[in-house]
Image (tube, rainbow, N blue to C red; front, side):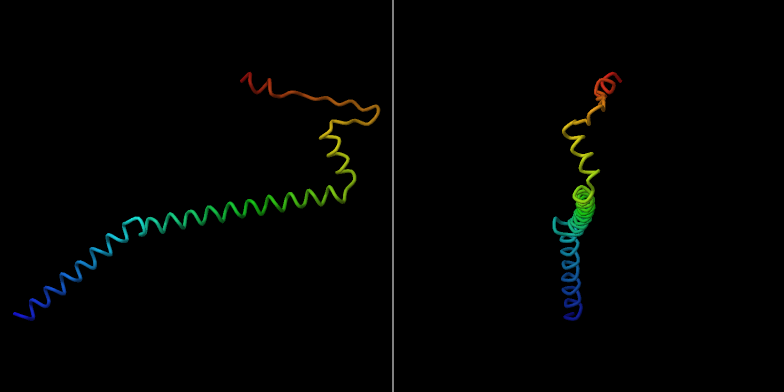
Length: 101
């Protein structure tokens, strides 16, 4: 009698532990939260790689501008809309053609 009661108590304890583990794993700090955190980490890593790539491109551009006078002249001429004597600059406005669609 005592042996079967002890087995029943053990079974109930194991069942309660399994139920508790199931509830905890399905809860806000369980497996879904872990998967969401992993997705977030992956998104941050991708964003970080994009930023690093963009920084490298900007560093290359800065290096080109520092070392190449032709590149410097072209950038200055584009930003300030300057022309050499005898040159003609044509500025086309594409915003009207986009709005007509």
